Length: 234
Image (cartoon, rainbow, N blue to C red; front, side, top):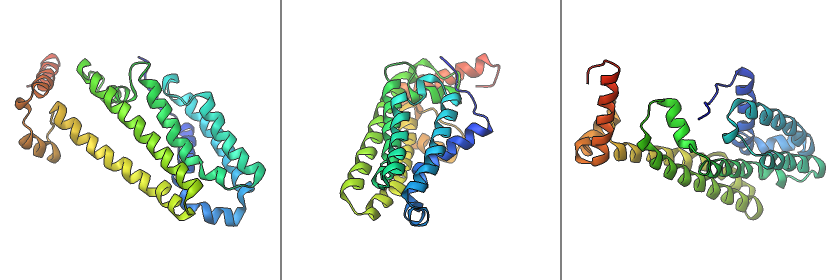
């Protein structure tokens, strides 16, 4: 398994720039278009997007990188806006991001480990092998969440007033992702029942005791074995 490398400061800055295109752009698009015009704004975004894509490719493993077609699609969207002055191209950029994430997540289901398992093993390098099935299911579920978000953004860009597109692309989509992330955290805790000394863990431990499920007993036996191996008190 190739390791996730820590990006340097330039790569972080470039990655944040690409993220800003999707997160900040829906909020400020109307004002920027009025101030700069579609062509000038698209030209600026084209340079920012190209630099960000290059930096991201060098910062993450090839298995998790955007495919060449994804990178070209982003450049084509922004270039189309720069050449034609048509704002619709820029409205599709947040949908591009969601589709790109969908493709990365789906691809990781074919080349182990999945995205979720990679992240889990970066956080906990000695995570047990029995987390793999759960990570696969979570990766598959999140891939379809990104796909649904992309479809919603596309539909709003073509069919709805700009205010609806702006509301969904700027904050509703991220509220949905945050809510699903919180739900995934709770489901994961209840499934594995490996608790820590934290308020939410203590509450869940009372509601869903580890000893009441096979996976809970398995998870905690693994934790105890790891602590014994490290010479720590159980």
